[in-house]
View 1 (cartoon, rainbow, N blue to C red):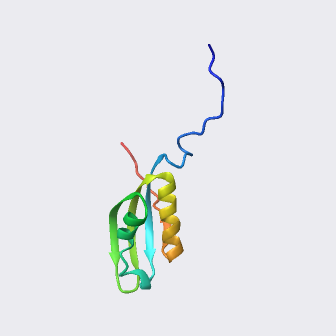
View 2: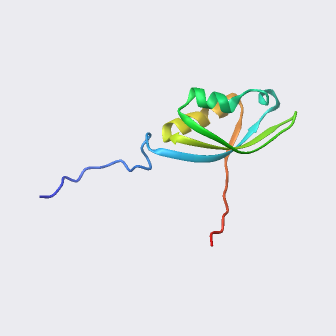
View 3: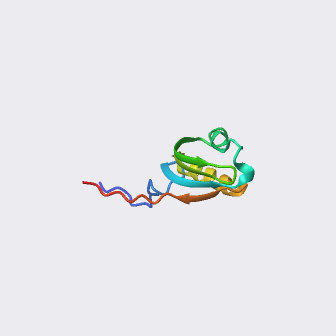
Length: 97
């Protein structure tokens, strides 16, 4: 018996499929003392992992991993951009042996 052929949404495009993103965050001076990473964990169902950070009085630069459902990760990124944080993906150039 043949199964009916229907369009299935691939796991990579589903909003509830897991996603992990590594991002560079550039904080403007007005947000340097704001606990943005803490707020991310409260507002969105994401796991945060700070990989690297450099903070001065003028700018904060953070390499942050975000993991969670694809829709939650996307919403978290949109929220950070909305409050004034510049968000860029980390470009990983790794040579595996």
